[in-house]
Image (cartoon, rainbow, N blue to C red; front, side, top):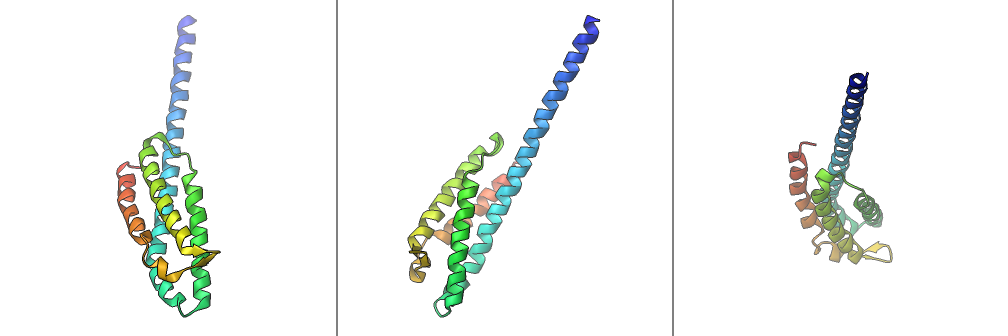
Length: 145
């Protein structure tokens, strides 16, 4: 009877630890998907924004669209920064947050009372910093998540 109880206890312990492991794997995959989506959003902005900046100089509607994109992007970066990453991705998340903060600061500098200052936008490090996210995406992929 004691052996049966001991065996049952050991079996339950293994099952519970297995569930914990599966939870960690699920959290890691979920984080990897969020981080990848976040980086892709930034890359998409970096690809479309330069043309929008040029068009915005002559078109008030394009300028307003660019301003809205920047505001939305700042909100998304702040939301991403607040994510609690799994242990395996803490270092990458810290690097992503640092780069997000640089971009947010730069974006806030080119916005004045909710309106973009176009000539300042072109001279910022926003696009250079966004391009650096590619290396972090590669690191994230190397984790196998």
